[in-house]
Length: 337
Image (cartoon, rainbow, N blue to C red; front, side, top):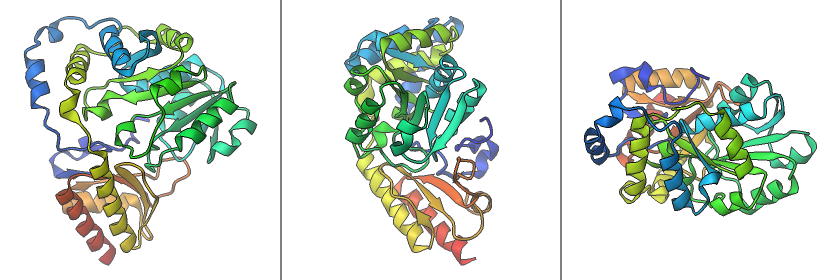
């Protein structure tokens, strides 16, 4: 899905002052990272590791799992496509609305795709794989951990792919590394892109059963993760304390945005993290998005291309308090037109 992702800032150039379309906070100081990379000139002239084993080893150490349980990929999206490839031709159940890349990857590899709206029907739909996002993009909602584990344990014949790219933004418990390594039918996807707020450097990883991770390695292209991303990951993992995410403050701001939307007659869903899904009472998200860019320099995510949503849906993520205030005032102006 090349054209349907949220952060399409590249389309608008310097017209956008505040970007609410990405779920990642924007005001991050990366000076230390940039300075470090400038001192590593050889990364531009030498090939990277054919497989990013150095990053895998460090992630395994930090996560308390064996290195054989970890695979580092070119963003979590590469892991999604590797998993779909590994199970080519199988049946995939996708809990919607959710990240579109699951269905796109499944269809590339000839899966039979079925959309479901609840974990309650998993046992009866005959799927080989279950894809879910936790926290869910675009709703921001988190599955209750014990309930999710119970569903996984009740269906040992199904592989559960749990995308926890936004886990560090959640105010509720998500699956842990031990939840994964204690089971043979679950893989968790994670994202250093989200953890360190570096979407331009594509680097993610998966933790899962050794037998499955070994098979994914066999499908991965050599040098799929470039030298700059590998070196950045090494640096960031060693300096993670400087990149802490105040999930509670971000969630409070998301709730404040939600209250403001509701007061303007715009319906929203409860959220457990820093972003939320909303629905306009009139007009379309595409019209609202265009008006915001042209008149306010603000960018939002038109969520109409998520499965089961409609042209009125949009998604926003909390930014700074001042920027959120500007968005609230813009909402009021739009509604009054």
